[in-house]
Image 1 (tube, rainbow, N blue to C red):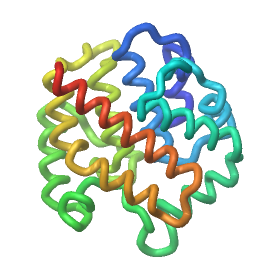
Image 2: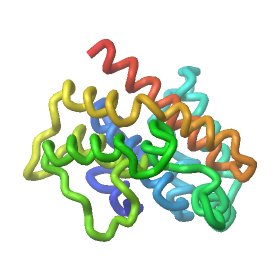
Image 3: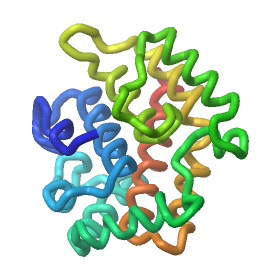
Length: 212
């Protein structure tokens, strides 16, 4: 996902009155952060954004958000790019995998990916030709969730039940393992905070789906 996608409709972390639009913006942010290192503009937006959490709220999600803001304010794009490359690309096997099949089956391109592809096919999603990562990459899954929430000019937002089922089948079973792997990696400084935000946001999502 390009940084431009994070500015469509309203500025990232800008004035969002609708809860679903706010959810979609957070999925867009997470999808971008775990697809490539943030640009200087995105780091600035993260560091200065205020709308996600009211200052009076000290939930685990808000604490994770403020920690990411502080990390964004105290680093630069070049350092974060080096960290991204060392953590998620590396020389040879990546130190931290970003693919669901690895956490669910122990290997890449296993049955969880086949099940995901079948669900995506049923929903009418097609793989983009310029994407080299498999569909179980965490950024691709965030993109799907963002689209299910927002829709587009031709497609209305998906029913909450479909959002819940996709999240529960393809994200909920493994996101905590991914977050733990990123936080524990020796290379991470900025990204350990991004992983903590991912984990706490998905905890909130799962609880909301339980009540929905």
